[in-house]
Length: 456
Ligand SMILES: Cc1cc2nc3c(=O)[nH]c(=O)nc-3n(C[C@H](O)[C@H](O)[C@H](O)COP(=O)(O)OP(=O)(O)OC[C@H]3O[C@@H](n4cnc5c(N)ncnc54)[C@H](O)[C@@H]3O)c2cc1C
Image (cartoon, rainbow, N blue to C red; front, side, top):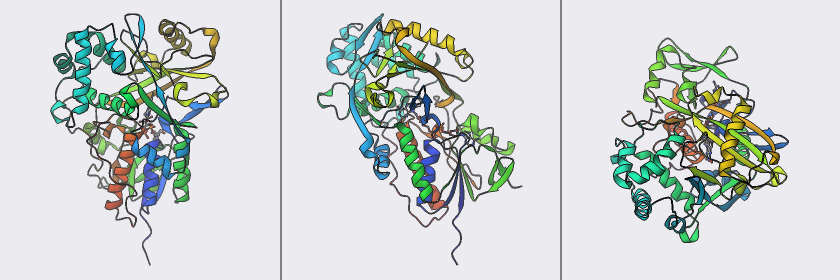
């Protein structure tokens, strides 16, 4: 008689938990996926917005998102991937400038010719660098000043960092901009002539990928449970995790894998294991995002870099990528502000956010008219991403924290790559591969381990 397969609980049904469940079931585990919300998807979920189903937050794919594209192929929905050239704008000195490749940089009048040259040299140097180890403990701003000069730091980098990190970025290592520059390079792949970026989407949004992964996981036997918030991890007297508590009842599993970031994980960990949180970054950013549905395009750009004090981080007109077939020709404009969960934006009245953000939007996009706004909403997510501070060790928290029956896999363990669907799928597949070995599952990890050194 063969032994029953090991029982695994996956806590959290975002992209990470869903792909992890799919892979573990494929390798032969008996998996239960527990999601607190009414549907899977987490930050990448969709919602009904005034009669149209749209992404809660803007989500695109870049051509180098290999694992994402491979998953779409495997699930039979790659035909729904669409890539299009997009533009990026720069708002500086009260004017908008296109910023799509060497030609635009050469004509970028807000910077002196020397600063333009230094910017080009900096981007090239970042893209040629493969090894980030020497950047790990270098403070970002002094490093930028040395490589780029004062003009670039004061006119470009500092304002951009201020708005992306809610005014506080002194803790960042140089690695951050290296990783970001490489992600930009990957969006430029596939553009002949080196101008502009290429971005893509799945028709139907990330929700379609998550839905297809969920369907396949169910076919493989995964018990997918929504509205099943985990209230705590259950431990035996030796501290080993024996399962989870859901709806006031204890459930027993051979392995519990929590995919939650530390502030959410803290609510589940028994006191005896709270020390595990020390290995994670201390600071986290959330996002408050005004979403507009408008009658006409506001800007010819997918996104805008804003180089002045601003109430929001950027403007993202996703219709340049996702099209308008699913919104009856209306266009979607996301206006996010990245900020900590205790920032005033999280308690600010929606109407006040609308007024403040659209006042500034009207400066950036002079064609903006309130009469063209068909619908608007404010979406809030207090826990989006960790800030990886310089000098923090270990650089990433261990997946196997040394507690029997417990694995920890979350966005905070993605480093130095930037956090996005691609890097999250890589993490899910890596964890599934390691769990397959530890649990001696009959299957083999369905996918090769992804390289971890490329920041693209
Ligand atoms: C504004 C914005 C724009 C983005 N743009 C892009 C983009 O263009 N391209 C891209 O690839 N990525 C993008 N991302 C990043 C991407 O959305 C995330 O990296 C990814 O969705 C993270 O997935 P996750 O599963 O790790 O976390 P989450 O999506 O946060 O999932 C965690 C899940 O756990 C659940 N949960 C929490 N507590 C419990 C509990 N106690 N019990 C059970 N379940 C629980 C939550 O409800 C949630 O569903 C963007 C993110 C944001 C915020």
